[in-house]
Length: 432
Image (tube, rainbow, N blue to C red; front, side, top):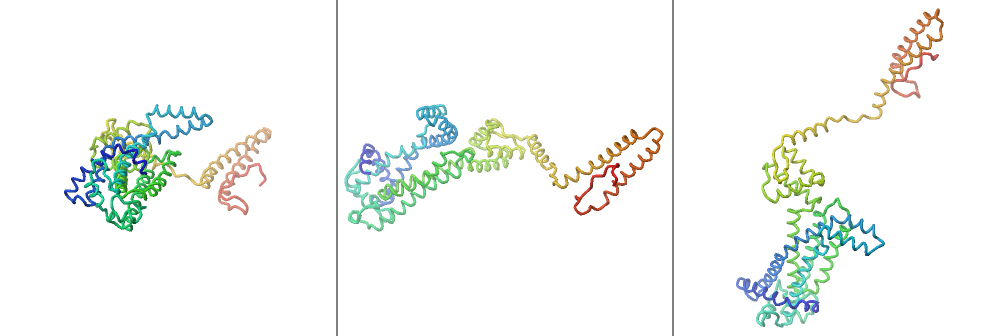
């Protein structure tokens, strides 16, 4: 670690100068040799660096979302050119260029912080050994050596031997308790930041290997920082804990105010926006108007969260406009009420037995009429002309028999083994 820190020695002078400036401010309030003065100087250094890195953080968010949206296309390229690595790389680079995506953008904040991190580590190491560095003269180095945070010197480490800790006027037990608590808090904040990102701010409709990689990082990163933390001085732990807390707060703000499309966070945000718009009948901020404008511009490509938002506006009698505003619309209310009424008027589905009974009743009547007509035709053709009167009487008897069979058949109880319900009438020419 000392070798790596020495590589960034060119930035130790600016870092030490910033710390001295903040120390002169807090030293006038808490005392120049107190842990509060030096600890808050380190915290202020972190806040200053993170403010300067906000543009990189915005690029990180855009890059992460673009990478997530490109995962299906990247997977298709990998499957298509799985036997040609060179062509696969060329197609990937072409895809990145067409969409304006930089895979390294998601790592920019960490990469940009690393010089300041190692420079601070180098400064604290020199303080622990009592050597001057940057703009820290001998008096400032001795003052920093005397500064304790909850009983632990800012230059002490968890793995230091008792003799080195005693030289800093502290006990090894205090140093290890303080550093252990800071390491736990540092790892926990890292884990929580990644966890809320995976659970709330990820498009759940896209299942890609990228999500699995992010899930693995959620467990790997905190473990790495916990292992490395035992070799960090207390001042560096203060630095890294502060930057993790800043990242966690920054991430919470993004999740609540600018969520990823298709995520749970977007659903919660649009529900809050819907309540606000329906309560006031208008959109009260430029940022909210830009959100509605983007949703309207998508048209039929809206996700489920956005469709529910537009439907909720219609039920409240409001229609979203292309400029992000909303207007009252009676047509939207009528369409919403008409759709609800149509859904209510849909007939209930009948059971199988009811459908069979309904179909059997008209079929029986048709069968009876068809049987009578066929009997009449056959009798007229078979009998001679002089016996047609007798056939007519037989035809009348047949019709009466058919009618009587229909009446008695409906009242007659079915025998054992017969199907329940109305039975099909027998043909008039049958004997029984």
